[in-house]
Image 1 (cartoon, one colour):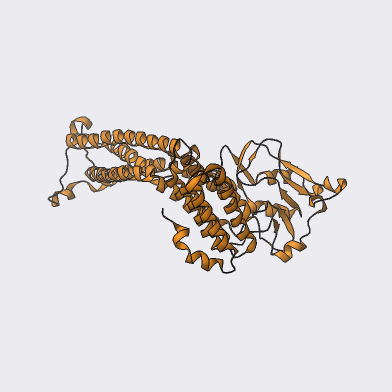
Image 2 (image 1 turned 180 degrees about the vertical axis):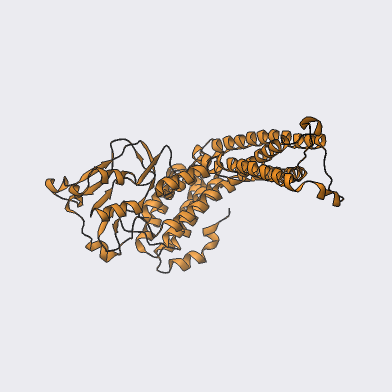
Length: 468
């Protein structure tokens, strides 16, 4: 249920209809409430204020008709501008970034404001009648009319905000900042916690991994498991770790995940394997299957790789021959460097997950610093190696990441990508550009080889940072 609710919340947050619908319903309630207050209080109180006066039926109709008509016209224009901006951004930065623009709360509230104001004016307008029309007495909800004018003034303010918001939101730096911020928040939220409680090295070494899941197990032991297969085709958007741990503990099971969030799966593929199979009946398998939320597209709910891929895609497009915009790639490298620097300071969880009693329950996919480096810097090396500006900032970002690496193996990974960039650059660059990049790479390697590499890197900020 938690996975389904989180998926629903993510869907509603990235839709253009949810916030405007809520605001439209609020307008209906407000219109009914204001008309009821007008019916009870009347409009005689307005005569005591110079700047207020009770309107007559014809005048009230004209005001509300003008406001309502203009609001629905502006709402159509706002929607058209929003769609045009989304199409432009999708074509420039990649279709996977479409959801980022649809999630923008400013656009949703702007559209909802105009629709709500129109609906409010329409509902109040139908309650106005003159004495001749009713055959008894006339009714003009003057307080409700005053609120309608206030809503019109607020709508003008929202329109001014929208005119500023749209061009600033599709600015490439704003797009990259949005993705980068979400990536940094995801790193902070996801690590060191993952599925269950991560055991320390001592507990992980002693964890009782079933024979069927061990490397080199014999044929008989290797078949002592049950597969829980997928019933849908699509991308895994969310895995409810709490549900899996609870089921595994209740039935005394050990689960091995075959896929992780962001992976594509189709019907019949094993989502996970269960041991011992005798304790996992059909109901248990169905409950385990329910811990997986599958959709038509990747989501950033649990998939940090998806956010990394978005930054990589923007940088790769910027460095393509048709665009040739290295400074956009530089901005992406800055955010990737910040995210990997943050990740370098964190203790990544073991792939063996234990419950509160220390019993092994879940065997997950290994999460390593090297895998994230390969997903980001490894994917961009081939593109940055063809441009001197991007290549120099690539080395700068590696230097920034290395400043946070206290573990030798992680520092070795950083050095590996400096070597890979230089190797690829020998094919993509030549002359002065190639010599300059090689000099930078050699200087970075010399600093990393020194015991006091952090001091050397900080002292070398002049060459390390370069210019944006």
